[in-house]
Image (tube, rainbow, N blue to C red; front, side):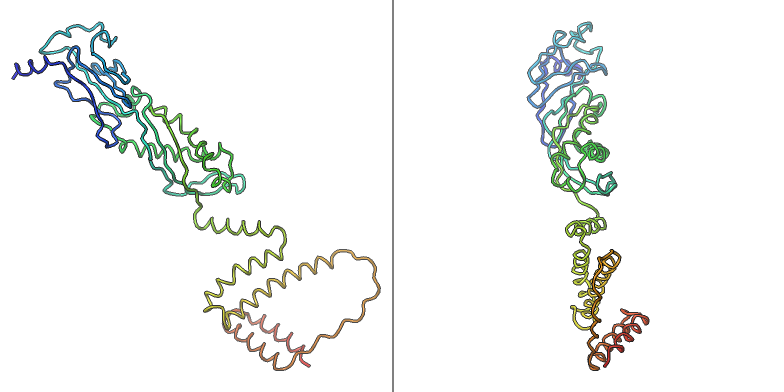
Length: 348
């Protein structure tokens, strides 16, 4: 057996790696007794780098090309002796290959809404997701900080850590961009650049380079989205309170109709009454403001015209409808009594 091992070691080793497409980032070349023969051929392909580790210490890093492993190509080994010993070497060596191609379409997203500062709202909670790409830039640093002596290290082993880094720097990226939330959706490219700028040092600290970052969606939780919709509606009507009340009434009518069986009968009357009350309040406010303003002297106003009397059958029909609204709990007893007294005064 010792003779066969001796004969096996006489052949020049060819050390190389072709990826198998499973997202491997680092791979250790399997060697007999973890020993490399003098003059072995090391082939490093494009999109790869190799790290030569001798007796636990990184001796050299090789880029794409073909190398003969001798004391001339590995300066650290120039003082080592006994390369010519065939049965046992006084040192152990490893070769680790690293994939330097881009690892694309890596997903990131917020599992819970993230609270951020905002110029317009002060603070908002938002959800976001997208993807990013990266590559190994410094295999020596990646080997010492991340992959270590494992026989294989893949993207799945690193994905959770990188996703956590993205979320950790999300708030800082928004703050650095200076873009209000309402403008973020229209400036997703700028937002992605701000996040990437925050993330680059964190990736570089473990030997990686962040190649690209995208933001595919930004949204608010449902309750905050409703508040934002109301604010947008108010912005559309500006300071015109009359238009705002019309907007509010228009928003409320479909919901009341759904709750009252299609908006007919009592529910339809209630909607009409609610809309009338809302608009009446606006008119009363405008009238009060007008009375408070000083007016120029004017000739005595003519006597006010008498209020047109209502027919008894109209008053009775209106009272019946008001009674039904009171029975449904829409009107209180006091409101019903007030309306009733007002209608009775208008009888002939």
